[in-house]
Image (tube, rainbow, N blue to C red; front, side):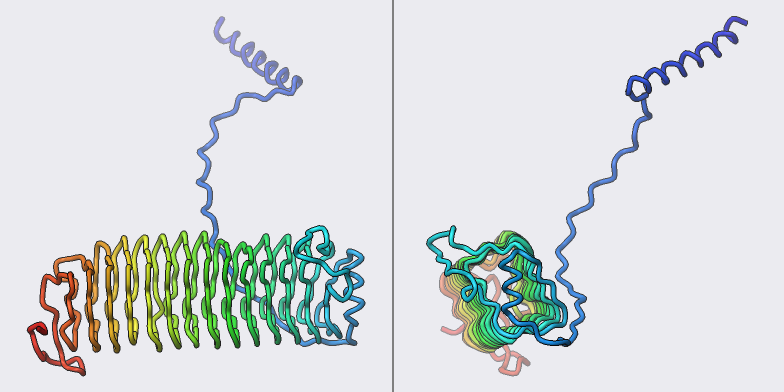
Length: 410
C-alpha cells in the first residue's frame, strides 16, 4: 500500500523538477543522440555551363556611359546590348603605374555583360575589382586586357569571344576563371597570373597560349583546341592539370612544372614537337595519344604511374625519367627512333602489343619485371648499353608479321 502511494508522489516531484529547470533557463537531460552522419566529401569542381547566348538588341550604349557608371561605383548589368566604343580605364582615369599601388583604379561596382557586344576593347590594366566580372556570351571586337589587375572574385566567361589578344599577365583572381567554350581569335597570355583555378574546356585559341610563372590549384583544358603554339613554364598546380582530348596543333612545351596531383592528357593530340622538361608530377602522368612530331621527356619525375598506352609516336627521346609506380606502354606504335637513357620505369612495366618500327637504344635503363618486353615487337634488335633485358625481344618484319631474326645485332 505504501509503494502505490509513493509512485504518484515521485511523478509529481519529477514534473516539478522539469518545471524548475525550464524556469531557470536550464535544459532537461536528453537521450543520447544518434551518431552523426559522416561529413560529405568535397565535391569535385564542375566547370560545365548551361549558358544560352542571344544576339544583342536595342540601341547601342556609348562606352562613355558605362565607364561613368563604373567611375561612380555603380553596377553595370547589361544583357543583349551593344556597347559602342572601348571600355578603356586609361582613357577615363588618371594613368596608373605598377610602381605605385596607390595609383591603381578601384572599381566598386559590378561589371556584368552577358550576350553583349563591345565594338572596341575592354582594357582595365592596373585596376582593382571588388566584385566578380561576368562576360558570358559576350563578344569583344578588340583586346581584353587585365594586366596587373586584382579581381576580388573570378571571371565568368563562358562562350566569350575575343577578336584581339587576351592579356591577363600578372593579374590576380580570388575565385575561378571560367572560359568554357570561349573563342579567342588571337593570343592568350596568362604569364605571372595568380589563379585560383582555370577552365578552358571546349575553348578555341587561334594563335598562341602562354602560361608562365603561375601558381594555381587546378587547370582544366579538356577538349581545348590551340591552333598555334602552347607553352606552360614555371607553374605550380596544387590539385592537378587536365587536358583530356585537347589538340595542340603546333605542339606543347612544358618546363619547370610541378603538379601536386595528377596530370591527365588522355586522348590528346600534338601536331608538332611535344616537350616535357623538369616536370614533377606527384600522382599519375598520362600522355596524349597522337604525336605528329617528335616527343622529348627530360628530367621527368612521376610519383605514381606513367601511362603512354595506345600512343602513336614518331621520334621519341627520354632522358632521366623516374617512375615510382608502374609504366604502361602497351598497344603503342613507335614509327621513328626511340632513345631512352638514365631512366627508371618503376616497379612494373608493360609493352605488350606495342610495335617499335625504328631504331631503339636503351642506355642505363631499368626495366622492371622478369620479362618487361613480353608481347612487344621490334623491327630491329634494340641496342642495349648498360641495360639488361632478361629475354631476347621478339623481332618481326616491317609490317609486324613473322620473325626476321632472333639474334641481337653485333
